[in-house]
Image 1 (cartoon, rainbow, N blue to C red):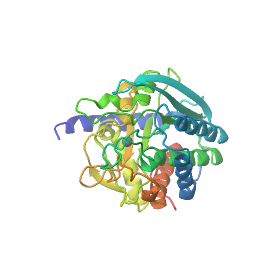
Image 2 (image 1 turned 90 degrees about the vertical axis):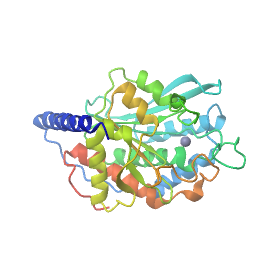
Image 3 (image 1 turned 135 degrees about the horizontal axis):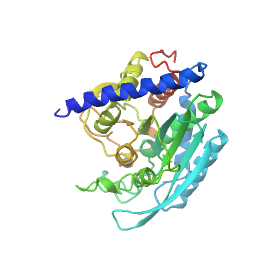
Image 4 (image 1 turned 30 degrees about the horizontal axis):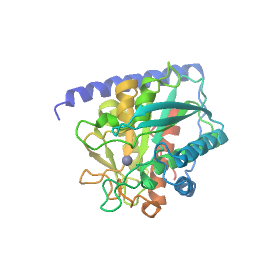
Length: 330
Ligand SMILES: [Zn+2]
């Protein structure tokens, strides 16, 4: 591609930034190594079942509101400090959407921070289906899976404390967008709001990971365009770690094009390097179930949830320990 020179520049700059941060913190206190905990895929699976049980969680519905309250309680259960950030945004239909980003933090005072995020709202229509295209979908994968993996990681972070700050953000109003040309900014309304109005006005993170559609049987994750542009070092490290963990069937070492998802707006507006882990198939499309009624519990695989959950968990703990080359036994 024509931007190879720029990529190399970013790579060198980011390597320098990471090593500087590591040296600073290590020179003050030698960090005690925290073993990488085991990610329980059963637990993540049950978090998907629970979300679907609320009903269709699309914008401006009581089911969506109930799911939001549950997310707040789940993060508080794991000793996260939680902020509910309300906003109103106009949808492409002209409807005003009343959204709430749910932001949970551990070690809120620590300077070294990592951002983990997913969207919890689900699509209001099945616009890629052939039947009932104006009806909402379950969003088992598109919405619930990313949230479910992060809730299990929240449990691990509480049980096996880590020496950095972590923020888990469940973004709202990601999936009420329009597929029409030139309508990119009708997606990710919650992340766009947060990126312009972060819950802490001095907020910064070393890097962020977005999980979207991470639970389907046969899912594959490839190196996405905006992620490579903003966080190539992190992308390569995550995919490299996944390969050493024997999970290269899921984390395929291939470049794909640019996906408009929450991470794009955080990169553009909050200037945080972001990695999107999202199911994109070999032909460059999302899964067959995408924005259809098929996006239900039947397509969810515990093996996929486990692969993504364990790789992300291992990466975060390794990075926090300052040893991203360590292999993982799970
Ligand atoms: Zn979607």
